[in-house]
Length: 366
Image 1: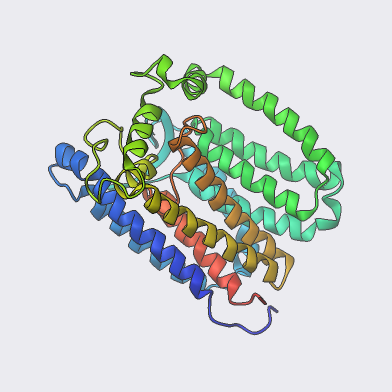
Image 2 (image 1 turned 90 degrees about the vertical axis):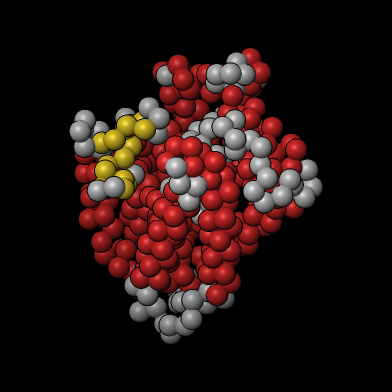
């Protein structure tokens, strides 16, 4: 069906493990002080992240050896399961509230975030839809509208938690996939204008989102409130200079930057490893993007191409948003940095997605 099976993309695997190793080191460095204060164990977050990484690596190798067409076969079932989980997470007593969002379901001592897995399920289903209906995608009613309606139903359910960051990544990923499939530019311009109006409505509907926008434009207007995270993040990045203060020498992790091991881990990395360290991480992400694009172009069929495009778009959008937030170029959205930030659902999903990409690379011609 796919042609001769070969070895997976070694460079992609090497880049992934390099990012993962940097992430494990930085999670320990960024969280040790906070973990020792709160749990009397400086390795608390590092040990859990190592466990998440182990589970993720097993998932990566598992999906690397599972024919990517399996995702096509089970795409509809996966999507339905994720929709059910998005409903369950909204039920009090089932869904767990953290930082004002009901986004987690507790599983023993751990928790899963259904919206993270919805991103992958949506990519798998949309790749199937686009590969089967590519000739119709230029038509607004027959091709574009049905796919967008599905995406925005999922986005609406994620917004009920609310989780604007994850929802934005999912929508952005799907838009890239639809654009690559051949949708008309004129349709995108119109939808883009409608999207801006809708986005403005979402921001205006919640006071905390308005505060995030105003703090982004002028964080010093409320330096101890909505502008606090951005200011502390910039205080971390600035002193890092060219070579950084040295690994483990961050000052901002001493209870200045809230939970530095999650969304703002890049700020601690830039403080400790400087411009050189930050540039190395961005270079690794750029190389990962390049390998992913090559795999998408060389995939033996449309489904493989769209699936690879979706995975790479998801990672790229998430990296751009996270780095944009940390450097003060975008409003705070609560998006993790792939492979580096602390978090089980995010890390497991990313490694699983890389596993799928590696499987596609086994059949790609490049």
